[in-house]
Every structure is written in structure tokens, then in C-alpha cells.
Image 1 (cartoon, one colour):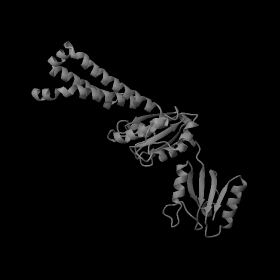
Image 2 (tube, rainbow, N blue to C red):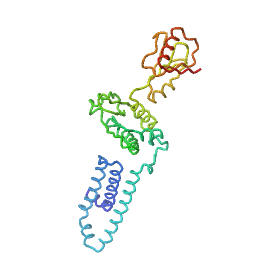
Image 3 (cartoon, one colour):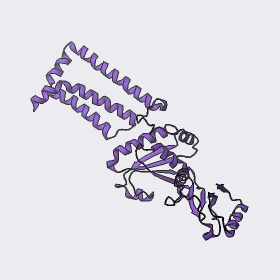
Image 4 (cartoon, helix red, strand yellow):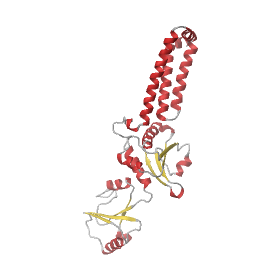
Length: 305
């Protein structure tokens, strides 16, 4: 076994140096010493130590001989080259304009409207990502996106929580599905939250933008779609459905609901606007009166035919 190790030991210093360099680069990119960083540095140091143990005579000879100057020159050149690489990585990481989205679909690049939204933030938003231990790849993707958001504004902070190891935190934010991001603004009675299921690079930036819009809308505007006259319905099971419109409105921070005035007799007090789209049958007198009362009280109505 020792003879086999000795046969490959001349490569150990180079492997060790490369691992240490990779560990340093990874630490600069992630801004923290994680398991991967520590493992790279530790294994790199182990390779250097093994070389010294397996080849003590060679190490001693290199130190005692004139060739040490050339050896040191090589080491210095390697370290200098490594330092340049680390420095460039650091500068590129600090400068958001230098970053490149390798997905090819800009899945991790903030949308222009998201950048505009974050640029005008006057209160901090804290994001909690709930990922199980097995979802490390998904969590890493979420981290890249959150880092991009934080590069736009210092009002964004985040943390990751394992819902299996910390079920009480998951219950506090009503998270039942691992892989959920919860956006939080304010504290106590003034706290508002929105949540989204993180599906990796699949429309990630669009979903995050919508989650930001929802958390910034402390009071959601309620839109009621009138039904009962053959009009376009937001019910996805209806024969003629406007469910896609409903999804767009919901993603934009609006709360939507169907309303049958023949049954309720009045427009709810929380209505911001009522919508009537392509009704086939005429409205009854009591429905018209309910709409008239609502509009007289300052309400709004959209009619599309």
C-alpha cells in the first residue's frame, strides 16, 4: 500500500495546491466557510502532509539544495497565479454587472421590474427558505437568486431552515411543503408574508417577483367577477373560463373571487372593483340596484363585451 502511495506521491503537492486554491475561490464566492470549503482546504492540506510524510528525503533535499530557489520560484508563481484568479473572482462577484447567468434563459437574473421594485424598497424584507437536507442543489439555486437580489439592495436578507429539523418554524409560517420561500416584511401585528414554491430555474424570477409584489401589498385589493348570466368566469372548470386572467391578477397581488348578485343581493364591502365580462343574459332588477348602490358609494366597475 505504501509503495503504491509512493508511486503517485509526486503529484500530491500539485493536487493539494489545486484543492486549496479551489477552496479559497469557493469561500470568496459563497462568502462563508461551508462543508464544501472546509473539505477542499482540509483535503488539500492532507495531500501536502502526505507528501511530506511519504517523501521526507525529497523534501529535505529540496530544502538543502540550490534547487530550492527554483522550487520556491515555481511555488511563488503558482501562488501568484492563484491569487490573481481569486482576486478576479472576488471582483466579479462583488460587481453585479460582471455576473453571467449560465442557464442561458436568464432564470437567475432579476427581471427589470424586480430591480425597479427593489430599488424603491424603504423597509427590509427577510426571506426564509425551507429546504430539507436532501434538497441541497435546489437550495443552492435559491441562494444564487437571493444573492442577486441582495446585490441590488441591502434591504434583502435571507436564511435557510430545514423544516424537518425545525418543524416549529415551519408551522409558524404555515409551511407544509419543503422547497418553499417565505417573504416577510414588518414585525408583530404589522408583519406581512407571502410564500412561493421554489421549482429551481423554472420561471424562478417571475415567481419571486410575484411573491415580492404580494408581500409589499399589505392590503390586497379584492376584485369580484360577476357570474350567473353566462359571462366569462374565473372558475377553471367553467365552460368559458378566464382562469389565466385570474392567475395573472393573483400573481400581481390581487385577490379575486366570483360574485353572484342574485344570491348575495349586494356587493361586498371589501370590493375594490367588480368586473362583468361578456354576459349573455340581462341582469335582474335587484342586481342592477345592488350595482347602483355600490357605484353610488364610490365603487368601481369594469364592463367588457
